[in-house]
Length: 291
Image 1 (cartoon, one colour):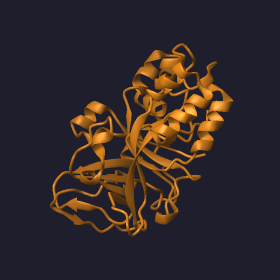
Image 2 (image 1 turned 135 degrees about the vertical axis):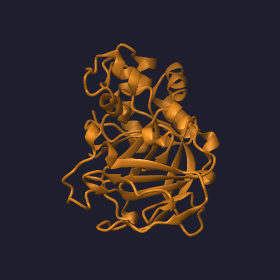
Image 3 (image 1 turned 180 degrees about the vertical axis):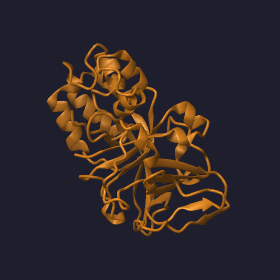
Image 4 (image 1 turned 45 degrees about the vertical axis):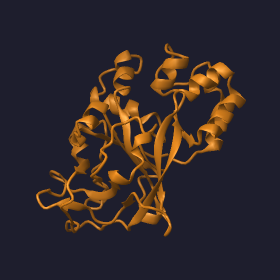
């Protein structure tokens, strides 16, 4: 099931919901919205909260992330937590420090080794580092890696919605429906889905909120990986595990940074709220999707 998520102002989303759903269903659907921080390439007059590409600033004691047996990871993005309007989010982001995102992008092996959620051996191919100190120095890229062009990012707060077949929405409108599939309810009607996708079909860059999944909900992909693919989609343990994960950040393909993830795809990092609260960013999980 190919998915898209919607983001926008609360007023716009309320108007859209009331056009296609009963007042009762509209209120239930609106109650599932989550605030997210939309990241866009900044102009000269925008305040930057981070950037795509360039080189990371790391403490002298920190090693550049490496996938053993394959090589160093490419630097994707940095986010300055102190500049984010994080108080609006329902996840516990640090109030200071920097989040750094790394990914083995195929530069060193011409794309032969893939980082896949379902392949545990590939998990070291994507990493999140949290740098809490101010004693960092920009680190040159390891041999063989060409840094991506720098694209500064600015932020705005938007409300985000997710697919009707996402476990959180299904639990409200059709708890007995098969996981990941459409079901007989107005939130799954083609009319409502078309209106949502017409409202917004861009994946984009984002911190927090509902993920913009290109295919099936990324939370399900992560849950399948954590459970080693040993449970079926009919098994309630898969829905339960999927509900344990929230979006930390996603990064879309971006012309300004010369980033292309597969076929115009996106990179996603998810984390359990408890691990986020404990700043255990090494426990974040990664997946990527493309159309």
